[in-house]
Length: 114
Length: 115
Image (cartoon, rainbow over all chains, first blue to last red; front, side, top):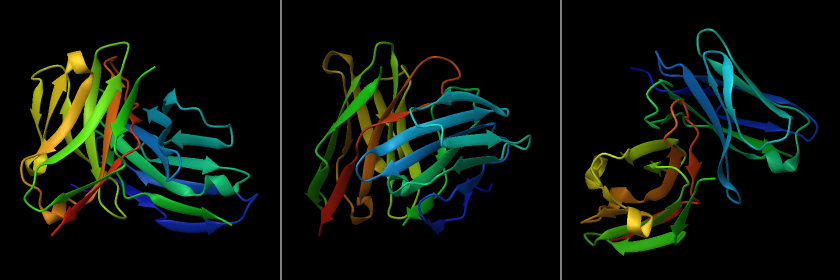
């Protein structure tokens, strides 16, 4: 079955702009999590959505937001971009009910902020 | 708060040699522990997981890890390294509360295989 799909794979923005990233989870998965990966900070948890509700949230400013649709697809938005937002943004899906911790990751969206 | 510490940001081993990647955890509740691998320009893939069943966990690609509560460790091993094992490896922890899909990752260990 199809894996986790993230779009776009690469994008370049300038400071002050906003960006929306999209994630389509594996069919049947109801949980979508987002992580930010940078060389300096490593992998950091942004938030998790389950059945259209935010269930967990990491320690990121309010400029980072997300949502999940009824078909489990998720989007994350970053407003007023800063240079430090340059990162690989990874989306992961899971059933959300088994607590197995087995997350299935997409290939990521690489954001460069100039 | 839970955390994992990976000792050694870079590890190099010869092809055919033992691979040992170290991970120590800190958790106030019984932890679930994981090892993920990331190949260049790809997302993360689950190698193996510990969820309080057997302490010796076998994963994909010949990797295994042993949960040692007394040492708060969950080191990853493979008896014989292969060139295709070159990648970055991440240890991760979550608590065992139901419905918690949040993982806390270590800083990663980049594994290089020497021909």
